[in-house]
Length: 572
Image 1 (cartoon, rainbow, N blue to C red):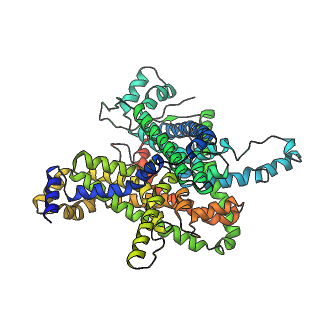
Image 2: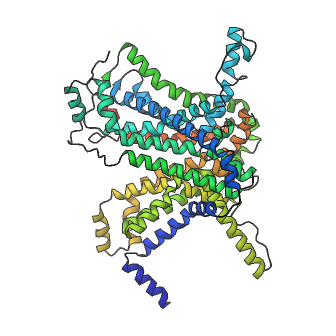
Image 3: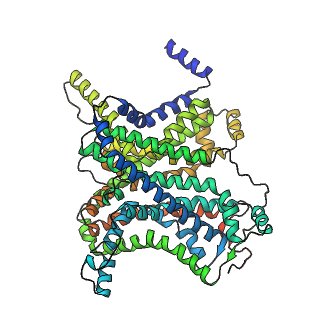
């Protein structure tokens, strides 16, 4: 007891209190999967690495880099271009595209891949229609791009991931000061030259972050690349672990992929090194909108319509038609059981992620120095790590813990315990929390930062402990952010595929695994209701994000809506 008290006093002298110690402990628990991957990767593993590096590894690296390059360019062009058009230009349908351009974010990439293949492959609706019109008999009579290819994967991922860039770049455009734009006009720069020389450089940090997020999601994707037979790192990890039965090889590939992820993050930081963008004026009057006429208005309308049409309207329409026609087949395939599994897992993970995120954010707010801040930051890096990597890091420690508990139980009680953690929903929930904790932690940290520290001081002078201050003062003020964080984590858990496939119990299906399995077996019609349910679950956070960016412009309660009333400048 004396040793424990001495240890606690030593921690307090270093600036640690109970909250700080708890935050570090929780952060270490959440970060365990990442640490486990590194430990397994550096352990002796025979010649598996040399075999991989001489056979499939170069192909995985090549295809992954080409995928990232294509998705990066595509999301940048579509996301930034459409954000500028709806923010600074006036054309028919602008009010609709303000929020509609976010809708593809609700569609998982693998769902769009299934729909696109169903409609565009040789036996799909489009090619059948073309053969009937032009009288073509077989594939040799005409050329049509191959859907299941690297190019198809790039196109599909771009259509569902560009909203990350659109979201952040539109918010950046809305926050820009009118003074800067007015100065560019006085220097003789028109709307388009002003975009490239002024607005785009000012929005560069937000755009880089958006592209980085899109690339991380592309790295995490498993359903699309597996369905299109594109050998990327994620598909390779899955193949090496489960098909080659090599945990060490999968961990080593996962470590290489983690280096690639860290390189992406480092590149984003390096691109913004030493650069600061400050507003030199508090003038936030209505942004000028440039009225487009004739062909320029038509171009803007089509440019904004195509991403919404292909990224959301097409899959939603096809899935709705199939769901209405084949709903009885879907319901007979234990649809409600799979839906209940998805809802329960996502709800549990969302609740735990919010509680842990609040605990870490509040512990960091109370102090603890750089150690606590570094620990909490490291614990929230899971969102940048693909699900396949986290699955390895979750499974191995839990499996070893299960073996230890089973051995102890047999030695003491003579009763085997079996799998208590690995191979159960505990592993799935643990993986979800480790991967999506960053969403809740980031949301709640930002919300707590908006509460002035004087509130904490006032609560302490009134005799409140840190826990009481959290419950009575901070919790009511961040309640909205708690709900937002829970919703974001819930929806991402509903869509998560690679981590769920690897960690789920035997014969345990969620909506994501059900849709992937059926669609991979060319049974998209029977899985349409499940896919449509996943898409519908993602629409609510899209609406919240749309409302957020609309209100993001300082000085205007309705942000982007107020911008619609600005002066018009005709652009031929």
